[in-house]
Length: 107
Length: 120
Image 1 (spheres, rainbow over the protein chains, first blue to last red):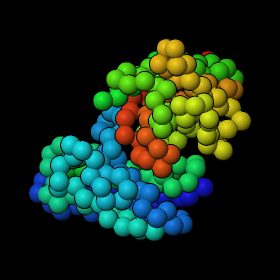
Image 2 (image 1 turned 90 degrees about the vertical axis):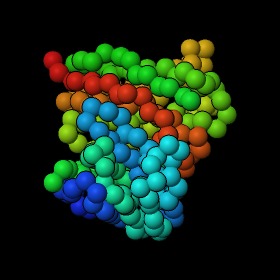
Image 3 (image 1 turned 180 degrees about the vertical axis):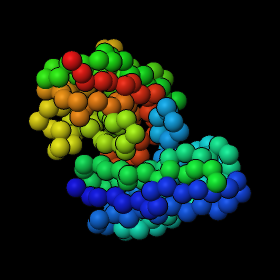
């Protein structure tokens, strides 16, 4: 199985801050990397797919980059509605695997 | 816009079989190229892909659960189902159904999730 490791596991930030979350795969996954946002009690929501493509309807303050084994999710200016847990997921090979999540909390 | 909704018992006894159904609306479950999957999340923990089924009926399971999992499609009801046998407390989780268009595509559509507790 491909292991996905996110860092940090949690972070505290203020509204307006630039936030960066990293995801590392245990082997190359090309650009088959997806990012999801999950709020308490809700299903995950797709934010970015294929490492850098913004899902329709997702604000442009979200961006993704990377290929191979190292990937980044960036929120350019954190908004109140962005406080949530973020997961990366590889869809390169079965079994699909997720990172352990990064919880973004209010500072 | 696809909409998915899970249904099934919220409480299952240890050693029994967990059975859930996902009803699809806004599109046909037999539409070509769509995969229909199950993902679970134990309370306070991360996400685990259980498996997916192609519209044609081909199945793909997580090896960690493969011996206990069956995913099937009922095109007449526009539903797909999950069966997980011999459950233990470790199978207590929120179970989500979801869909993706091609095999390597992301999980773009999700159900709201349903909590299944394994307890006697």
